[in-house]
Image 1 (cartoon, rainbow, N blue to C red):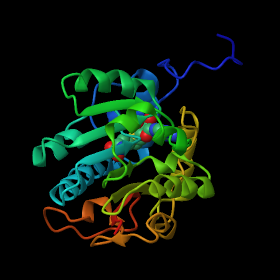
Image 2 (cartoon, rainbow, N blue to C red; image 1 turned 30 degrees about the vertical axis):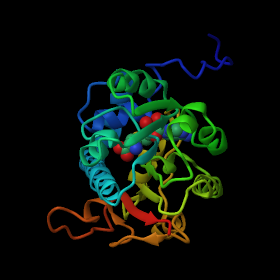
Image 3 (cartoon, rainbow, N blue to C red; image 1 turned 180 degrees about the vertical axis):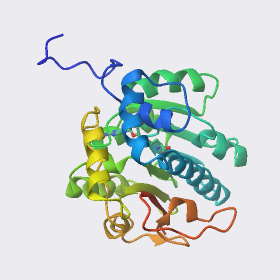
Length: 269
Ligand SMILES: C[S@@+](CC[C@H](N)C(=O)[O-])C[C@H]1O[C@@H](n2cnc3c(N)ncnc32)[C@H](O)[C@@H]1O
């Protein structure tokens, strides 16, 4: 392939770091290549706590999905779902309600490859390759349409993915277009990277590491910018907080200075 040719969307390129595989590496998974580990190690060398906040983010996913399933929602659309790990959305939701339907969406072909294998025996769950930056195409994908009934409540999950959309207005427009399809009773679950008070030097290091990935950027946003994604929704207590402090199982004092993920859950009345 020449430099000018683009790899087709289904090709897994082990030489370009993938944010899905780097995240898998932070979580201690095995579905990553040397290029992913090298990029991730640059970050871990100065911010070793990245491993903690990826685990905190997964724990937020479990707690929020359980809550929404307990509230009666039976359909889940998880965009930027990442590589399968422990406590994936379908496992958490189907523990509460075995009839829960889950559609995983990711633009990285490796997620499709590993997801299909995991889900082969779970007829209520599927994984679709589509791009968050084309929300209408994503929602109209035949597998999304056939699995989810948008006249009924859906839990929309956007966990640790919106910060891969560099443009603020584009990210806000994507959320708005996805929310437009949601019926009353739906939930919106978002976690998003924020910079806390890390030094400019560390911030630049993270930015540079992610520039080399296929996603091309990681754009942390302020609490105000993240809160705006929930405009018009009822924000469940405790609102937008560092994910480890969102309805934790034990007492946690939110530390807003630390970089990490902020998370919240909104309910569409
Ligand atoms: C950091 S992982 C988060 C995984 C999971 N949501 C979680 O929070 O544990 C981000 C995922 O978003 C996916 N992603 C990034 N940009 C995307 C886009 N434009 N469309 C769909 N998926 C995207 C990546 O491939 C990756 O799997």
